[in-house]
Length: 417
Image (cartoon, rainbow, N blue to C red; front, top):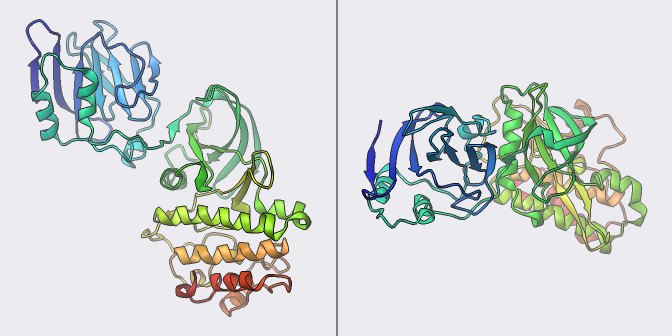
């Protein structure tokens, strides 16, 4: 249904706008047509390079604007929002849109930038009405958006860009691989982690949850959270895969086992705690909780000088969720020694539960061992934790440190810092 049609002047090309029904989101979306000579290769909103999916189709991965042209009469259409086909205004031919992005993104608001706000129909029509014949294309497009600042976006990465894919380990929800990523924006090969979610052909909840958590929680390289670069799909198994930063130094537990004798209070232990506390605070400030915080999910990324120029980062946000989310089946996740006692009593995971886990990581830094490492992790240990048993504090632990640690694992969540 055409809502509005107009000419700039009798000597200009026909420009029009309309509402059409998206086959993906099943609702009306705005579409804005421009003339055939718009053949630039960068986005009119953010100046990023456009991704070409064919000789007549291109899109901006940041703004998620499609630039679709008809190969027969060279008319260019700019589409605001998801579609799976485009119809030429002149010759009426219909062409499919191959965006390389799966339709589940739109249902979960993952691709549309958080900083962008699409105008309502009335505002959009008002802009169109006021365009004069001396229009500047960029100004028209910029006026479609209230905010032009771009948020970091998880992007689709073709599976063909990965080589030397080697399996590292299997987890509860998938398989971890190490791979070389070529043809990335840095124009160099980079070692990355591929986290494949098994049986995720129909978009499993664990894949979606981790993708959303990473999208919400990662701020920048200084936030001490493992970066997720984007996602891809296994062309054979059709499983979805997260593409993540590779921390070459391994996890905290392995680091402590290997180098515990050389890790001192003033040079490393407090710095490790400071960095991971920044990461945990970032997650909590985003109104998320980690729910599986332990030394195996704290990763080391050396960047040169070991003492002053390295990073400790929090990874595995697969179990993270928004603070106000409720578990659908009262599932208890995680590693028993790091789980707060109230969780075993049926309470929901909370920021305070993450702080309890943080206290256990503090204890691990004093001993080099995981808490309760000498006993079976079964229901007997759970009963002991519920009765108030905690790991024994070593005599060489500074008093101020011990007091903070004990407050973190206090049985009363309200008394935790």
